Length: 147
Image (cartoon, rainbow, N blue to C red; front, side, top):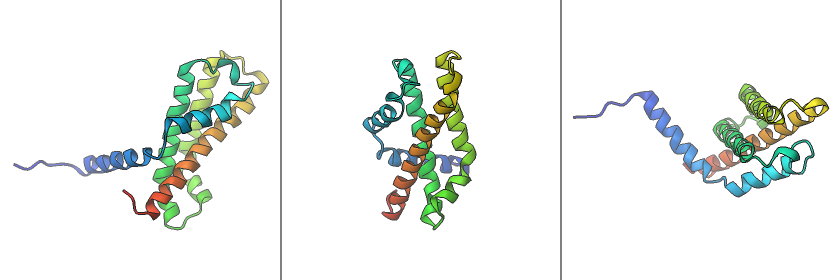
């Protein structure tokens, strides 16, 4: 008796295998350091970073942006510039930025005032950094022909 699998199941298995392999390049220490670098030294976010949920939400967004960058690195490997590739996934990146931004606004209880634009740019910088990092790591793995 043979097991019948569908194309979508096989594609999903392959995607999970790739994500596991690329996530080996990422460490909690890297996530924590970048989180502290961007959000920790800022007076906008310093007052409410004591909540562990905020830090974990930032890690989740960072991992998703990293995986998206790694996935999109196949276009860079085939000769497309990083800026053109970034335009391909602009919608997803904007979603990540707005999700993180809205999460911060939720925890500030509407006290954003004049700082909301600066907070948005911090979120944008954070997501952009992790996307670019994933893109570079993914492109390097492809050049080395690692799975």
